[in-house]
Amino acid sequence: MTPDIKFEVEIMSLGGQGDGIGSHDGQKVFVPHTVVGDRVRVQRSGKPGASGAGGETIRAKLLEVIEPGPGRQIPPCPYYGECGGCSLQHLGEQAEQDWKRQIVVDALARRGLEDVTVAPTRLIKRDSRRRTRWTAIRAGGRLLMGYQKKGTNEVVDIETCAVLDPKLNAIIADVRNLISTLKIHKKGLGIAATLTDTGIDLTIEAPGEPDMELRMRLSEFAQKHEIPRLSWGPKTPEVIIMAKEPVIAFGGTNVVAPATGFLQASAAAEAVLTELVLAHVGDAKKVADLYSGVGTFALALAAHGCQVSAYDGDERAIGALQAAVNKSAGRVNVHSEIRDLDRRPLQTKEFKKLDAVVLDPPRAGAQVTCEELSMSAVPKVAYVSCNPGTFARDARELVDGGYALTRVTPVGQFAWSPHVELVAEFERSV
Image (cartoon, rainbow, N blue to C red; front, top):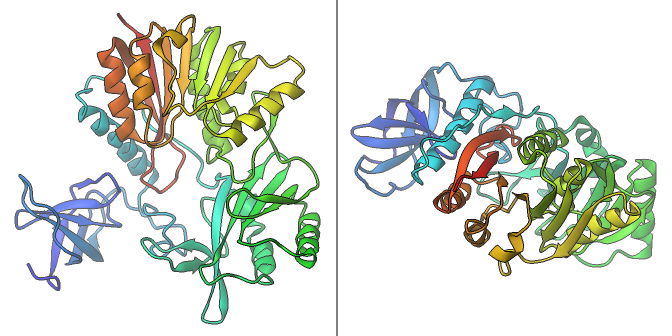
């Protein structure tokens, strides 16, 4: 089949990245921006994929939707298809909910875990993202500020974003005006914004050190727009002005989050994840929170009456958590420790006397930790994951070690994207 050939295909399923999958002349065809049931006209694009039992795979470009499938909707964003931030705005809510659940089911099945209760996906309100990173660059004599096109360094200039909290959208124009006055490196610069309980924490990720005149301008901007903290720098940002602490409350305890530090993408998603973790941990008294970050779960567990040991390799995150605990004057029962859990995981003996373990690792998962945990006698494990593939691998380790995987709940906190969060519940069965 030559690259310029056009043909029709019916979409029968969705792949792991959200591309529609159909069949043409015995070959599997992948078509972005399609849904199950679509009858579409496409044009082959790119090189053939690897051959397998089903034959060569083809990537194709969508030319026309001849007959829409039942799960198709009109994308709500004017930048959709150009901006690389969202890839699934054409997918209706129920279709997205079902597909994200199926991603988890399929990941478990590939590890031989077919008989697992996978709950319906808990979808999170669309316009609830509390953190983002814009890219700014000068091109063709004008400033572009927004998100990159998929697979390129080109920037799509935006005025609003459909997944952001309205408070972040409200400041885009003001941030653009500020950035327009700055000297921008040819590679551009980043602007990280996080909505905290006390306002928007802003970091301009630009190289070099700002001079006194620029510091004054940045400070004036922060004061005018009630920015609690404005920082400068790409790696370890320098605080230019902090009118008040940018705090986020976890379990009723205020934490001053590090600039550009990790938080769950939305407060609504965080609430669902916390609800599921607490429901599983139940009346556990002694709990270890692994990959704790700034204390999202540790502080909620402490408020639930647990005695918590929190571990994370991020020095800034643990510092923020410990500072919050210290301010509580003994009210919050959390002990924190800086520990790289991938290089120095908790050993089996360190799990003794624990009633439960909560872990929320990065996308790579927690393979070594789960190997040790599988040999422990901890009664309950709550595993929060942002990668169904590595989670399923780790789940297999725990199940082989005598744990029962009783329930998995997918959480759709990344609207219109292939990313899936989940909370899994394990109980020691033997």
